[in-house]
Image 1 (tube, helix red, strand yellow):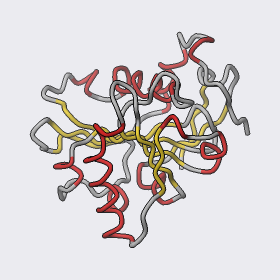
Image 2: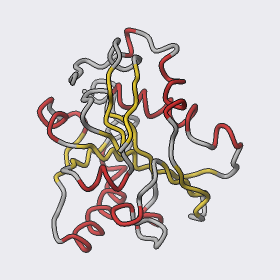
Image 3: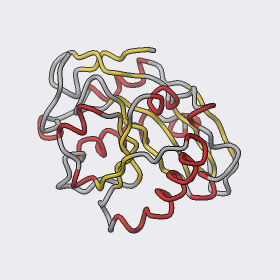
Length: 198
């Protein structure tokens, strides 16, 4: 397991949890349904597909909450699997900010100019809890039900990218330097409401 030193997320140097998608899912996790830009109903198919596949493979049903219902104790106790964009009034709004920056500045698509990108899964440190991670799940039910999506068993990567037709483009690991990009211009206003320091 790797760690990232990042001053952007808490205002001081903090060692953040950083593991692969599979490592995040091997620990207790909470599925968070984003309600930003629409209702949680818009993600119900993706959430249902993830839940049914997880139950089929592991015989348990993960806990699920809407982003606006997530409490501080949930953030301290669980890794988060985020499906959909958190609402601005959600305690996870800062997670959305970090996820957007990772998508635009860190994922390989911004550097390798991959075309036709449509769907991605990636893991990032949770800016609200230095000991936990967030798995961002931005995939369709087709991907969730496909052979190429099996993060609990084969998700030993930080990111995995598919095109809009469901063709697997690439998967890989982030380097520590890539997350350093996020520290240069993070403003005080963008900092999370609460941060757990080690």
